[in-house]
Amino acid sequence: MKVPFLDLAAQYHTLKAPLDWAVAEVLDEAAFVGGHRVAFFEREFAQYLRVSHCVGVGNGTDAIEIALEALALPHGSEIIVPANTFIATAEAVTRAGHCVVFADVDETYTLDPNDVRRRVTERTAALLPVHLYGQPCDMVALNQVAAEHSLALVEDCAQAHGAEFAGRKVGSFGSVAAFSFYPGKILGAFGDGGAITTDDSGVSELCRKIANHGRTSKYEHEFEGRNSRLDGLQAAVLRVKLAHLDLWVARRREVAAIYDEGLADVAWLTRPAVRPDRLHAFHLYVVRVPQRDALAKHLRECSVQTGVHYPVALPKLAAYRHLRQSATPNAMSWDDELLSLPMGEHLTDQQVHHVIDSVRCYMP
Ligand SMILES: *Cc1c(COP(=O)(O)O)cnc(C)c1O
Image (tube, rainbow, N blue to C red; front, side, top):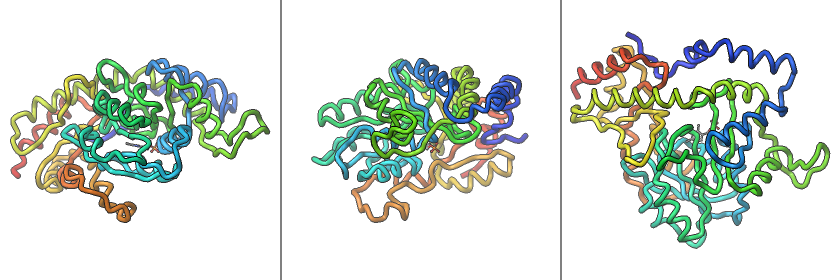
């Protein structure tokens, strides 16, 4: 039995009629950039998250960068970022003119609030927690650190559409939050796309201007901005898919529950640690095992595709060699052990059980 890690074609085929219709409508109207579909999607996504404002942008990396720029933090501020995340999180900090400060992650693979507290200096201006793999960070503790030191809080929600902390959707906690709609994410477009969400109307307006050439009207530009827009096709696709997001997250959580039960007694494997006040959206189901590459090879031989998120902790990358920061031991030692099992609403129970059986017959 084949178990694909991700199956975007399967998702398309389950929604082919409404998606084809939505795309055809955009083509008929040639409503490629801007237009009412983008505005509708922004409103619907804001309503879904229960936030006041949503601004569609070109991709998730831009969303973080533009959100940081709109906060108008002093140039060269320190911004605390987890040492285990996709490079985009840190990249956006540098691109926005600030300094990356890595903090360690805890057993949930999200920012360890105690380590964050230790890294705050006079120059720290913001925390940039990532709800990695779909599990919300400890927003109570991080909010407390932010409040104590008057720091902005910017959420990276690229992997956590639909995730909740204490009954509230992520993307509604920070001063501002960033989402990605890259095709492989929980809510994915037919290309690149992203969004910024906030309850602050000033931040929202500024993000919208930055993303659209600093424009106030067609040929009036208040300042130099940039071009980063969610296009009409992506908005049309996302509107169709948004209606299914909760169902998809629910199915991801079912798959995770089957993995949890089937792998509970495998002593050499560490399952995801989920805290009770968090609704984990399971963008990824990540386990930790010794000799990860050998298990991945064994699974490949059983026709099970896996992934690694991420194989190199950010402080080890050539891009960050110059930083020479103090240790983030969890992130630095776990990158050799992380393995992402197939996850998504495309999986049948039989496929999930095949993955479990294949893991169980492996002898480390
Ligand atoms: C995907 C991702 C991003 C970047 O989103 P893009 O749309 O690919 O630019 C940022 N942060 C995290 C954690 C991601 O997984």
